Length: 104
Image 1: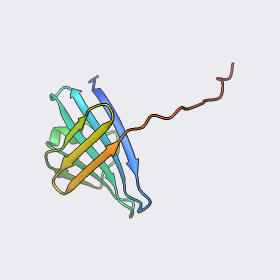
Image 2: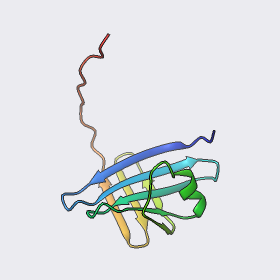
Image 3: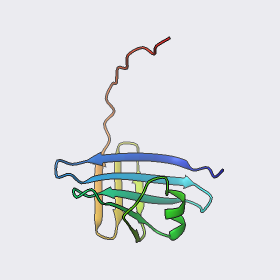
Image 4: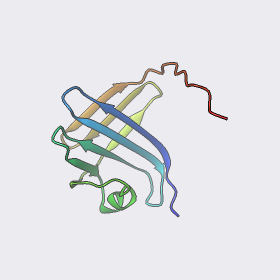
């Protein structure tokens, strides 16, 4: 079993575009970042630097894989994701979440 340590962040827009960013400082292939871009037409595109990236994140089916460098930087509140043709700048706000008690 291979282990990834890092974070997953997602964002969606009214236009129908959705992005899931994986930022993995520790992985079997070394540090990397990837983006799953779900287009409004339902197609899923993986943006990642190497074919090994696609193998590691192949938990999800992709219609297309674009091999390109993806960088993800987070300073705790601001998150920037860059690749060829994609630039996401996000501000992270933590909201209080009240969950119902767990059933016994």
